[in-house]
Length: 393
Image 1 (cartoon, rainbow, N blue to C red):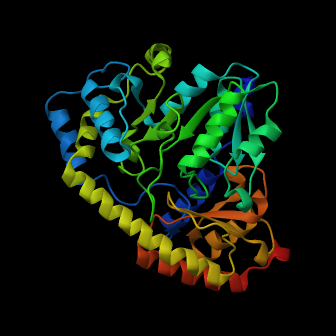
Image 2 (image 1 turned 120 degrees about the vertical axis):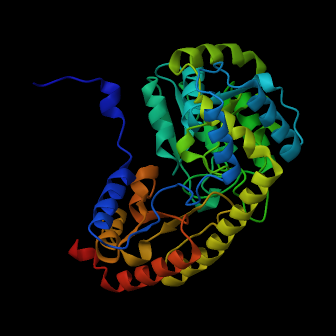
Image 3 (image 1 turned 60 degrees about the vertical axis):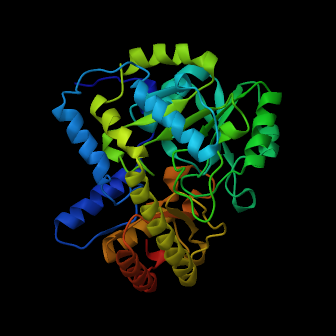
């Protein structure tokens, strides 16, 4: 029987890296030693104090719904975290706990964007952001950015691209797939450009904490009316617990709470109780050690790939990605990735997942493997480059 499904579902593109991951898993199941550099998930398991807190929560029977805004004690802990890390005073009432960072993005899209309207977004950028907009019958206006802009939106780009349907901009700092940051002055300039046009500023700060040699500024340091998306998945290492948060202006909270009540009732209660352990000194010490390990991985892989001929024009300051230009080798990024997956059993992601601008000549490496595994990956990539024939694809 032929079924007709919604236009919005047909318009949302698949997450292409998942097909690559499925093939990588097939090869791994067949006995091949796969090195996974394709998925943006820390290889470390959740820190033991967080696991212990989750187990204690289950034992204590914390398995019921919480308030839609989340556990009051978790929102208070996050407010304390902002005070400690950013010297910011954030009313816990402005913080909503969500099912992952995706839940925070869903709330922001639902609140801020009417059908037919647009947010400006950097191209390249995280693909699901534009798909969430399509889900609410809006769209992303992808703005091509390159190394000259450090792959970030600028006030000049906003001025050039703003139109009658534009209602705001979503930026990420640190950004996926490029790892670049926006400093305080840059965030302030973006805020001013959007305020001048009556637009909203939404900032993805999901990779805060994973920065190297510098600290990431929060947009709330320069614009108290911005919307901040964040997650316990990356720095706190709680990917499978599905927990995030949204910081919103005070006057937006009631409408966001109403949306949360209808869209998902509440974030997972066990995960919320477990996350209370994120802010304990022992947990933070573990997370800082892991940050140092990610820094060491970046400091190895970046020059190693450049030595092989990959062009990485901007040194990433955060997240755990390298966005590399493969022009020196010729050919298309998707074929390039397939070649290394099938011949050398190294998986990394073609640029197609991150937008349209120069996507066919870029790939993303996630340094979410140990240093010995990265060294083995580089050796295999060096060997695979000798057998790469772009014209034979």
